[in-house]
Image (cartoon, rainbow, N blue to C red):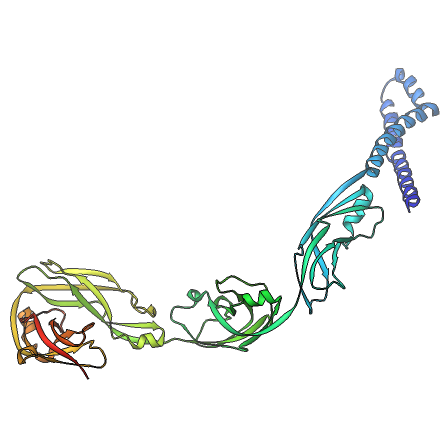
Length: 452
């Protein structure tokens, strides 16, 4: 093969010499002749000399020598030994993957090729750069194995880095585990939509690997990415090829084989909503002698979207305004805060106009006391008749308080944390109209709590 390559190279350079003779030497000679024809008779001597066969042979010889030296230098350069490095070549492993698990295998290696440049060129153009670790016939345990490079050119020397690997072979075992799921990128879902239900096509998977790896697996999850939804609308939408991951108790991924490695899921999307009133709540006490005569909001109702169960517990959307020491009419521009469980609201901002007028007072007598947050298994009653009802003073604008009756006022005791015995408890009062200040004339009453 080496002799054949030398004949090819000789023929190649012979063709180059012929090419230079035909394309360069002869045309240059003709050009010189044409130029000399333009000169006078004194130039005839130079023309005669140049026209001699010996002169042309001499010039051709000089040019041929120059060409030969240049080409010969290229030839020598092409024939010199050199080295090339093939970096990050993937490693193929020959083993029984159904029976064993292997650790310690390199994913890639570097290969240094040494040889003539011509051979290196052909070696790099070769479609096969197969790097192989053959584990056929090896049993469970620790082994030092060779890494081989399958190269077809015998004229090339190669070195693999690393050339060996220390591997550990484990028997592959399998276990059945319950499959759960996590929903990723939920915030990318339209704020008026809710994932009502997720139905996966299987709730059991098989994990395979070394025994010590399987013991680490605390959970196997399907990672359902909302960004993979084909469309975002109410209805049932199927997501295919959902990847599965195994995790340990700390949330780290465990490298085990999962069968199947992907599943499908049906996502049920709904849009629960509820219309709620906007309740403006004054916070603080207005200036002395003044009371709130009116509270007018630009919006009185709002449609909220969110989790259906959480929406059931909502009765209104509160918006607080600071009226402490307020002495004149005022306009508030406020942003509505979303309660827990609410993803979207039809109204996000509201303007509230508060009007003031002179304050007056009115007293309601015999407002019955109610009890809240009494622990289970107990009963409560006032120690005396005076401890079962109170008088309540209403403070506000006359036109507001004149029509308020006992039915519009609630006096109560908060019994959170109280156990068996006689207790003196603060009296709290609320009313339906937030423009009115409610004050119990009796600040505390005594109650007796007993077990049922």
